[in-house]
Structure formats: C-alpha cells, structure tokens
Image (cartoon, rainbow over all chains, first blue to last red; front, side, top):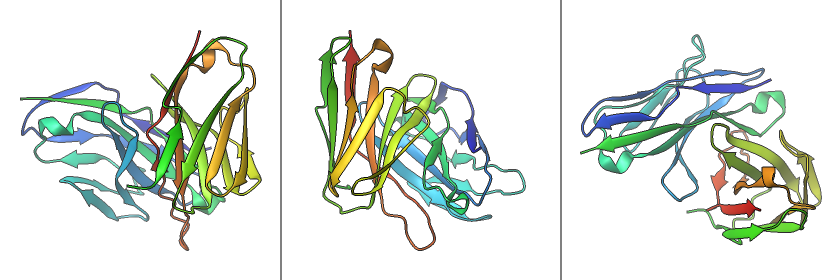
Length: 114
Length: 115
C-alpha cells in the first residue's frame, strides 16, 4: 500500500533560518505529491504540489522537488518567518493505482521564534 | 478559498448517543471526503464519495456511516459515539482533472468531544 513518512517534530527555528522538512513515500502506481499547511485552529491549505518526477512545486517561498529515484519530496524554504509557524503535512495521491485518496504523513510542527 | 462549510464547528456529546456532522460545498465538486485528525496520526480517511449515493470506506471506517443525497452535502454519522471517536473531523472536496491529479480542499473542521 501507499505510505508517507516525514520527519518527526517539533522543529524550532529562529527567524531567517533555512528550513528543510524531509518526506519520503512509497506508492504502487504513479503518485502526485503535495505539501499541505495547517495554521493554528484552521483547516489544511494546499501549499504546493508536483505531479511527475523532477517537477518542482513552489509557493510563498517554499519549494519541493519530486525525486523519483529517492522517493522523496522534501520541503525547503530559504528564510523562514514567524508567520510560517504551523503544522506541515506531506501527502500523496496514487491515481495510477485507481485511487484518488490522499495518504498523509503524520505532520511536522514548525515553530519560528523571533 | 473553496466554498466548504462544516457544521457544527464544535460539539460535546455523551457516549452512546448518535451524532451527525454535515459538510456543505458550493463548488459542485464530484468527490467529497471525511477525515479525522488525531495527535501522532496525521489525517486518516474515514469515508469518501465519488458521486451522489456513491460512497466507499476509507482506512478507519468502523463505527461511522455516510450519506450523500445531493452533490453539495456529505453527512458523517456516528451511530453510537464512543470516547475513541473524540477527534477533529475535516471534510474535503476535489474535482479530479484529466490527468487524475487530485488536489483536495479542506473545510474548517469540527471538534467533537465524546464524554
């Protein structure tokens, strides 16, 4: 079956630090990969996505590259802000396996301190 | 923002009582989903729907049932609530494109406490 593994948190960084949140996956078909973000007290919002190998998704200064050879989709940002404090979820859908269900990682909580 | 609302937003109930949560969308999307979010587990799929009256089970469907009589509404029912069903419940919608890429958009969530 499909699964997503992301680094355990919480992660605490100082403002302007570099961020990496690791995400690896297993899938039986041809997954599309996503990062969602959840701010305190809110639902999940799509942050970025990539639909095929070597695609790079980007949004709000965040980037992630779909690496098929390493089955990874690590999230990066060059300079984090306090407003980036949230929980980040890596996820995949495996439509090539006939399913549109999202499989999520467990989430990584990021706290950015001034 | 996608037009998704959930009701109620907060509910406290007692063990053994029935509970129904409602998800309403204004986007006319075909697919609707119910997830639960628990610490240490991320989000887990309970049930989903791929059309009116077409539903299927997800990863953690035991103790839950769903119904979809209209495109815009997807109901989640706990027939007899248990304390293990205390959680935050999220509804999501999507419209799979030709490439099958399925971006899901989430509602604001319902916090359910079963005493």
